[in-house]
Structure formats: C-alpha cells, structure tokens
Length: 210
Ligand code: AMP
Image (cartoon, rainbow, N blue to C red; front, side, top):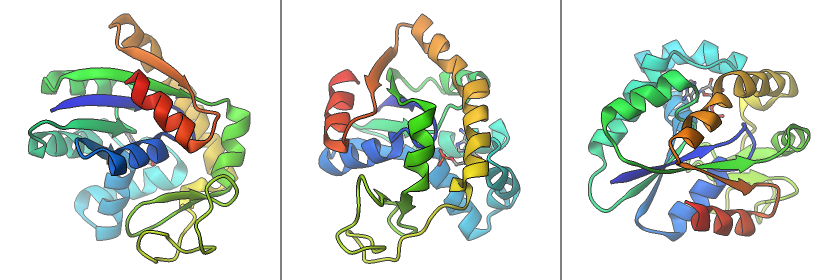
C-alpha cells in the first residue's frame, strides 16, 4: 500500500477527480476525510457528535479525532493499493501524524484552482448522500435532474456549502492547509496540476502527475 495525497482548496475538485480515478482503476482507493466524518455524524458515533459543530461552522475538527479515523483506514488497507487521500492532512500537525504512521507517501498532487472560481463551483455542487458521487448543476449534471446516476438517490446540497461557510472554509484553507505546499515541496513530493479544466482532463492530468 502507498499513499497519494490530494491537496487543494474546498471545491477544487479533489474528491471528484479521486472518485473518478478510483472507479476506473481497481488498485486506486479513494479515502475522503470529509466523507468519513459525514458518515460518523450521520451514524451519531461519539466522534461524529464531537465533529458536527466544527463542520457546520467550516472549522477543522480536532487533529486527534480525524487522525484516528485515517489511521484506522490505513491499518485495514493492505496489498497492491494506492490510497488517494483526499482532505487529510489539512495542516502541518496532521502531516506529521501521518508521517509517524510510517505509511509510504508516493506523491502529493496540488489541484490548483483560483478562489474566484471556487465560490461558483461550490454553489452548484450536489452530492449523493448514499454512494457519495459528486455532481455540478452546470459542469457535471446528472442524467435526470436531482437524481444520482449510479444509485437513484435524491441529490443533496451539503450544509457547509452555503456561501458564508464557504468563505470561512477558504480562510481556513489558506491559513492552515496551504503551508503544506512548502512542507511537501521541501520533501520533493509535490506535483501540481491546473484544476480549472473539465473532469476528464483533470483526472488524466492527475494520473500522469501522481
Ligand atoms: P471536506 O469534505 O474535505 O470539504 O470536509 C468537510 C469538513 O470536514 C471540513 O470543513 C472540516 O470541518 C472537516 N474535515 C475534513 N477533513 C478534515 C481534516 N483533515 N482535519 C480537520 N477537519 C476536517
């Protein structure tokens, strides 16, 4: 098992790219920290109960809480698998925790999209609450409006995708997560792709860079 980290602002398309690549390549496994947390909130686990308030505000949940979830997934992932790690680490402290697990990091790919475009992208974002497939009302619409192509479930807008919370999440990204660019650049692991293109092009560029 090895890990490819996806870095990028909320709404940069990390999750959509990782989801597409994992669905097309059996050895790629998409692990999204946000999906793990939303799953815990929906189930009402102790971690979910603790995480809920932070997530609704667009703040980061405590490092130990999310690190434990990621460590559990790493521990149960074996064999010839590349984990596409989406949303973790989100700050330098989490990157150091990840390093301590000893899991080999193959590369870190930054999906680069300007903030001005992010706001628009998130406004049109829709998600399947059941299979987690991602859509966009204009850029990536489902075949039937409001319905997931894969499992027929009604699509939802994430609670934290409202414009005010998105602004807060972008502030958190620049303050907490962006320092990871220099952190991984120094280790010679950083690659960068232009995320401001269509999904097929972005996914191809990601695969070539990782
Ligand atoms: P995402 O789906 O990656 O945009 O994450 C949604 C929310 O989950 C974030 O705004 C945070 O509240 C929380 N979250 C996800 N990943 C992390 C992480 N690595 N560290 C702290 N909070 C996280």
